Length: 575
Image 1: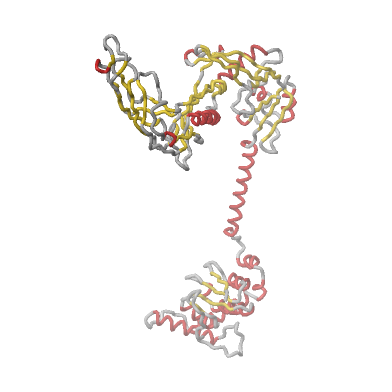
Image 2: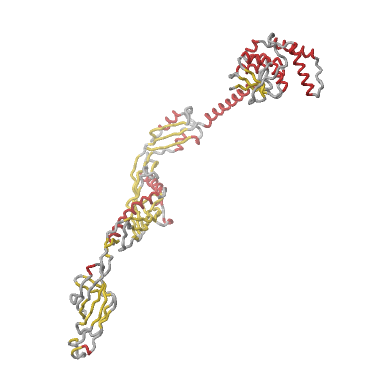
């Protein structure tokens, strides 16, 4: 069952304890006294506690191990427990109420029993000796007198009064300890209020003054030159340094192989060469690789052969005056192989139709055999050329995008200077190599991309100086925008017609500038510091060229522009 625990403080009196019992929420009220509690050393107080608990329909339980408190609790039949977890027990009272007297009054017999018990306890604690000098009659008289005195001082009306009235009755001096928390909170609140006022009136005020100036747009166009030598650059004279940006990128493109080659076996055989003329007389050499043809088919010699020279015995007639004919056959065999694979090179033996002719011999052949057909897909020159064209196109697009993405923000890129240099591409598989099933040929090349840039700040300074010289007048004394910006949507400056002749570069620098009357941050601040917002707007609008003025303050209570220039921001925009 739930219980309320009341921890009795050393400074608590009986009225505080009774009030806490009445105000408790649960039926069981556990009273936990301190080690030295004077308020519970009185039998009268125990009776008041027991009576208040009974009238409030609650059970009071004393939590203690103090023997004297346990015995006093037993006299009023109040349950006692050693701690909050122990089961409460009622100790046997020394004096039993016969039910014929008022439980709230201590009579002489009861007081006598109390004194006797206290003397017995003292004897036990002091080795059987009685230290107390008070006589039994005096103790009885004192207890009865205390009982009557307490009854006279504390009535039932007193017990029902609010606690603050009881406090007043007990002491006329206020307890400042109970108000300490409120005093501290009040001091903290006051400090916070003062701090806020100092911050709000001294540190918080700030203002932003936005001024719009009427300007005139002018088209800017000047011929400028560029150099690659830093020492030769002269931005004020329109000679700017070219800064090269480079990107090396390995690119790859896949392509389809369309070439076909017969990878079958080549037919082979033997030719027989026979001299058919007396000229030349000298030997006729047939080197390796000599081509012989028959009906459009070509065969190539695979070994060296020689038709020997003509001697006198070979001739009919005088060899020295000239052979009129050959009486001896002079022949030589020549091994050949078909130029290409294929079964069409397999032919029967033939004694005629072979070429070349007019070489001093005739040609006959054995049968050519062993040729077979196996058509495979290979990489052709046309395939590589087509892939290279695709690689060039992809390279240029991707390279330009990547190079410009990494381009320094402080430089203006010169688009016309963009150059792509493609390295020697490598095909895999190589030219005329067979492409296996499931393999996609690729072409890989290392490409170098270069583009020139020029310092953006130097370009802006040059445009401003030239624009002031060309366009300034009575109402046009300040260049508010040169058109040069790192933001692409705001940048109006660009370089066109870039060309190079003998390492000399020229181009057209173009932009749109905004020029108008002179309105500076210092001028705006000088007419605004320490003044009311309305006064600031009136004075600034009176300046020629200012079309609108807006003053934003840091907080709604700030009605003036601060006197401190560090707390004022000036923003000048053009229209």
